[in-house]
Length: 328
Image (cartoon, rainbow, N blue to C red):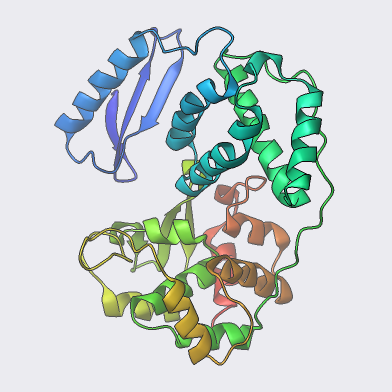
């Protein structure tokens, strides 16, 4: 059947040019609720596949092609990554390289770009990240046969990643307990399941299995992982349980909350903690505290959703044993 439900979401599954053609398997957006809507989506999608795709003009500049690249990023990458790429191109890449014909870029262009960015006060780490985004632009162009790709390797500037100042286990518990209302649950979820903030804010009640104390999370690359949680988070979920919608929703709009800076500050001050705290630090704490308790590194990587480890290879018992070790 070309239209069916998988993990409570509609999926279209068909061969573009018959059985010997390319197979297309696509999970539809969350807004598609009924079979009729799914069938209409499939109809429009197949029509789109048959149409001749838009192509950039011959000898197009990097600035001209960037709009198509942004559209690709918006469809295939996380919203935060897309926003970062667009900001990088608009603030740095396009002013410096925007008029260059994309197919004619040389190593000299990159050398001058790095030199100019250093003169303007850019850090080696930031410049290396910008260069990586330009590299992604050329990989995209080669994938869709808009460009031939880069015939050379771009040398990154040397830099040292800053080591995050991790909270102790006691500090982490104090911080979470000092959280107010729904934010306390959010901080606890990020820490006890090792999530990114963006992953946590997307979670809906339908993704939470209270009976089996586990949660299904949509990670980077639209990959799903199931993570068990302990009694503390179970009790917090039970206290605020609703039937549907996002767990961490704005009361007025019903959409996921967007600003948690004040909640972070209040919890940090309430817990008597002097260190700087940001959401991703809780994910670092999760990994570090598990490592301190002797949890296998492969299990930790799987829980974090790292690409080099398939979480499906890890038993739910192994993951539960790891997350349970973080209970105060």
